[in-house]
Length: 197
Image (tube, rainbow, N blue to C red):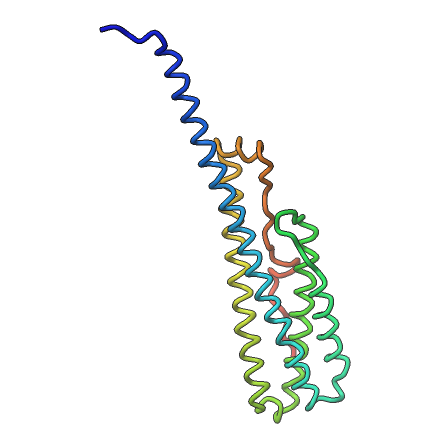
């Protein structure tokens, strides 16, 4: 049996075609994973926005009952205002930017905690239907925020692992796929808070 003259060329072309197909598939998979991380980040921002939208209603409800708690009410609105000004592009997010975002959102959480704590002094407020509904929505939103942050971290981890594993790491470095940062616990979060009466 006679071998074709250009068998070597055919083998080279086949190998090149396989490598090109692998490269296209790998690149497309990294693009999909990167977009999934961006989508999860948008979900995080949506939940924070939901919380931000609830705050004015909650403050106004409390304001009617707790008129002399002005400083607490102002602190909540100030924290909300500052948190809504912090914006992040997940594709170009640095650890410092993410920390600033987390701090701004943490300040809102702290201010809301103080607001909800003062409501203990107002039994009529605690029985108000609007307040109870807003408090329930706020608690639900906090849970959604935690889930959205966890989903973001899980998706970012999957993407980060993919761009570091060989052979996709070659494609990632060739096409500029960068590592995404994670939400991390705030400093001191490992210590249980003190509750004093």
